[in-house]
Length: 378
Image (tube, rainbow, N blue to C red; front, side, top):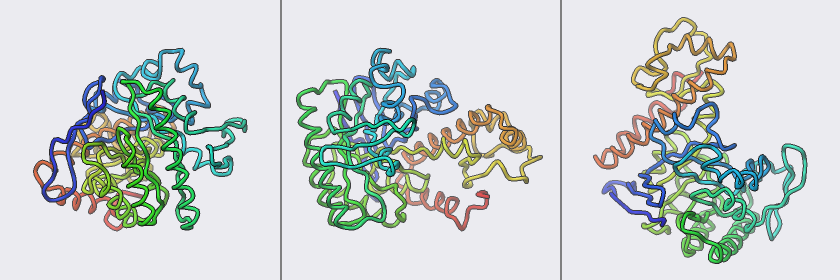
């Protein structure tokens, strides 16, 4: 039931437009997935997310495993019914969250031993357990358990962790062959750190495994953009054209367009929602902090070029007032605006691929989102 169809391949770059087709419908790529860590896009009801055109979101296995637990979610009808979202859901394996809580975890040959950040209780994720949990969630796309590699990291440690990811990928596939169903897809994950040789060998190894799609992991861990782009290019070279390619945890508008130009299809990142709750919004002229005093009596919208509900109805002055007063409404409004911006960005990217002017769009975004040119950041 899971199929990827290539619709258009750019003649100037490696960018492409495709369709992910399953029993639940069609997702057009390139696609950005908002992050609903706790089975919710924070501060926004599902209907508003759908109205902006989003067809897929991401939820987090680690957090939902700890609270409320996979058995409760299963008893309440699975993740879709639990959160009232009838479109696609991708669940990660929890590997990145365990990585980010490094003081609470220990990586072993057979899985990851970790302590809950909530109460300190001890838990263990094996490759099979990560899939068993996601099966109970009944998500549409599941990710295998991997070892997210920090930056910087020694060659020896990177190789050990990458080999462990490969071992777990095989275990995951063997389990999936015995327990697969037509309603769920399984993606493998490439690691290899920032070493070209290890990235190449990992891309070759994982792409030779019959996954439904392929994640490029470990590239949102503080590395420079130039190195990230180089590692993406190494991975893409070995990935099949008839499967979706997912760059995990990335990123900014410039990050996304750079990766699209190199052949990536899928993205997720907490930035648009997390930054909204911190008072930072994305606009056609770069980021803007609603907290600055200059906006106290500013009657203009967040972005004069934006047509979202927020920009049509509220001024910067009002939104600054809400934020300073810690009124709950502001978190919803700023999140709505940022997600609207990202939805429109992906539409712009798709149109630019077809018109073969993606480079021009990239230059425009780079101008406004580079540190030197961004006048709205502080």
